[in-house]
Length: 274
Length: 318
Ligand SMILES: Nc1ncnc2c1ncn2[C@@H]1O[C@H](COP(=O)(O)OP(=O)(O)OP(=O)(O)O)[C@@H](O)[C@H]1O
Ligand SMILES: [Mg+2]
Image (cartoon, rainbow over all chains, first blue to last red; front, side, top):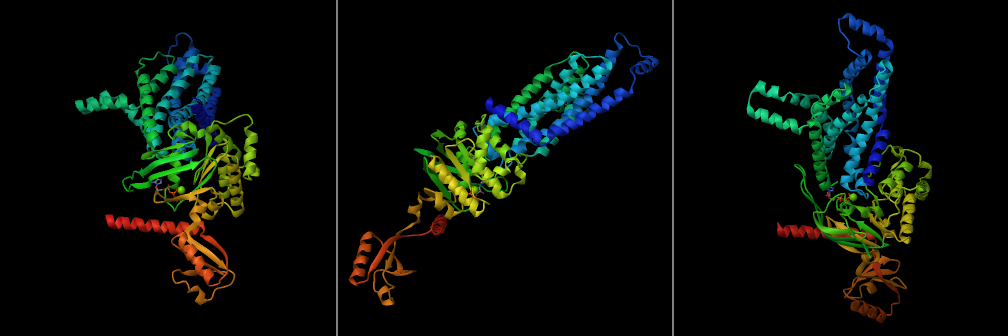
């Protein structure tokens, strides 16, 4: 465990030194500033008035519903954007590690190969968690200040976003070990995140549209094989809206995915010559 | 005690779609004893780096076993007592020299409170103190190599692998590195050295081995290897005239300059016979010594010989 944590710490240092942190921090700060600008320039009384003019009726606590609404519309862009930058910043971790001349340095140390991979995995997750926490806490403080809603449930989205990231990160590590290409790892993650996962959520409709039992079975298989980032997004938005989560299955499936992919990555890495 | 034991190790790199299989090491057996400097020589592609990588678990042998510091090489923990300077190393360019040494201390599990003191001692040793706070990406090749040597010593290793340590280092720096190696040896460390610079290896190594195409073709002390068998250098009081030189029908004396001649004899008996013959002719002998070649001459002739044999083998076996 000590060895894993050493690698984790060095990975965080590397992210700091390679300016991944700064980039993330700057983008997050810009987003927070934009939200701040919007909040400063809108007057709550006016907003409520204009909504009521349209005939909408509020029941109970108007302010908390408004802030809930705001957090709901912000959470999906936050989820997509956060994952986008996270994937971008970690995709080169493994290829950098495996570069000729660098890999020798790590492998010649009293640290086993599984420890090396797990340390890198944890390191990436910590880096992303810190960054996402900054953004989520920032939004929470802004909405709390504006609407007086300090419901802490919203804060847990930082963890669900990081969890979704950790699923894709396992895949990034796998591709990194297999091909040593950060571009490929990044592309595949984006493909899953923006195309495959959203499509597979609607696999039943697709199967019905094209017809065919075989297709339906294949799509079902893919659905469980490919990281379910869309479902994790849905869970995140329900957390943000303080709704109850309908199904925990995507979380279990994702956990199984992480373990399986990391295990296979380690097995492959254990046998590779450098 | 043997600090390195290599037992019948063969390494075959599996080729890819376009690249053929390569046998980088072939039935290699080798021992290095504690507290010595061992030089491994060989032409490019001989398999020198491959051997070090196998011993450090960077690459895996196809067949055979090996031990370092008494432990099987599959035991990664033994590497806490090992230092390594890789060839063509690429240290994280965003670190400064000082940070790299700290980084290595962390990786080897030897990071302590007084690490700073240790780091500056090492930077001092390799004459890099004033560059400690400069980023590695601004270093010259020789500076990188000096720092590389320092990082190989951070964990106070018992066994040190150096893959071409003087690559890109100026002559003064090379001398400094040699002195460091000798000092390490005097403190009981074992050093395994890969190099092309034969004259240098000759100066520091206790034993050397020569590798060609993955096979060990010679191993021994520098003296054993450079002493040409059965060739002696005889020095006389005076220059011999032609008649005298050709007067020994069973022997051929080759002038070596300065009243000296080399002669090849098949056994010590013949040498004594030659001495008798010379004395009979009343020629004064000043000295007779076994002729030593430079390691470089010996290396070149050995490699040529081994390549010739390989060719013969292939011609006979298709
Ligand atoms: N990772 C690898 N994959 C495939 N072949 C390799 C690999 N590394 C080395 N080889 C091959 O193994 C052989 C031995 O290489 P090695 O690097 O051990 O030689 P060397 O003696 O260190 O040479 P040099 O003096 O040039 O450093 C070469 O033919 C090389 O092409
Ligand atoms: Mg080499």
